[in-house]
Length: 211
Figure 1: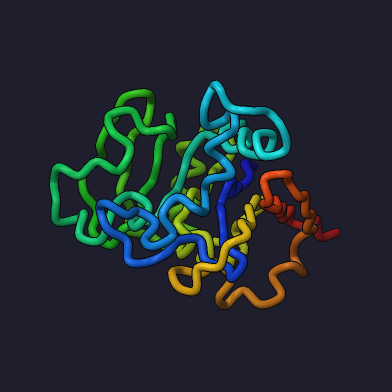
Figure 2: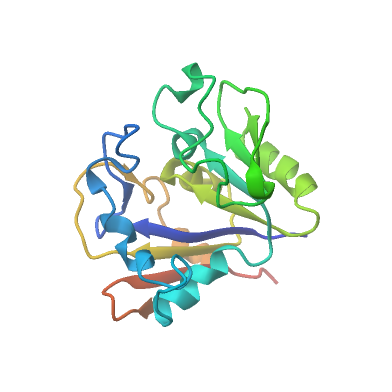
């Protein structure tokens, strides 16, 4: 069976994966781009970037992925459901290149984009969404793309096999936290930490095999 994976999810020291308020001009609220600076200098992000620890982790994002699941707030700012022309933040050729399921309580018809991305809009619980995504993944893995609320929901439901978080040395103080309600999550996972010269720490959570 395909695995469920999370990659390159950046969080602050106090556990926030996004700031507030989210708007069309500020997708990550008051956090701006601070959570993701570590990625911008990598070859994964820019062909002229550098190799190294950050790049090695970042490039795992796309390997073996057949489908992405994302939440409504990753697809657009509050109120995007009222704009029939809204097609996401990423322009005509989004970076997913797979079927992408957007979880929303207000589904709309699918949108086919350039580069192999088709957005499908789904009103479903995590387990139902994962079953639908696996059917579309053609045997490959399913990526839970965020935002933090969706990541937290899938973790709480016990549906995540592998998670890569990037702890960035900033304190946001407010926003949306990943960890709320996930007490003792580490008991179900093997956890590894790798520090990078950029100042971030890469945390990987791999589900323990129950014998």
